Length: 215
Image (cartoon, rainbow, N blue to C red; front, side):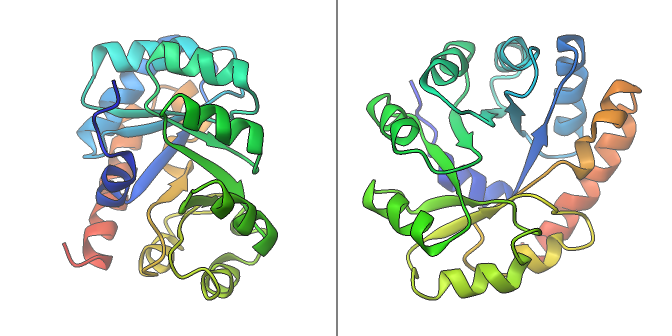
């Protein structure tokens, strides 16, 4: 079912657009904008009622896009996300129940962590790729580097406060698997139909990623 190596694919892409959709009708033009910008990936957050049908619409229309479900808090949301076609799960914090449920379903999960205790608990479940959230509010790259020192085998997806201004700094740190961010897919851009602008911002982000990582 999930043949793609999700962590490897996310590492290759380097950026995960974190999307909150108010209207499912915006899902397809948003997906097209991301594809046109060279980024076939989206984390659709379960913060709105449009999340589940949006995941279903995108995965059906564009199977080449790696679609995940974000802000997932419980098993019921996981089941709904998987039924809609999500290929990975992201949660804002670390929950043993959520992680174990995903592992039982053989679906990649990236729980949010921000302390050494969080990281150690996650490691005990066998995870080595974790979301660092909220990244900027918890000290940004300085904190991430400090957390990485005692856990050298862990990779992170910093999310929260990531922007075009600091993206390069995060991507330049070798323990960063990918960066999650919403600056190129802000709600007002989506709601106002400014998909060409989303494509432009996405292209800029991907160009910076290639430059920083020497691709």
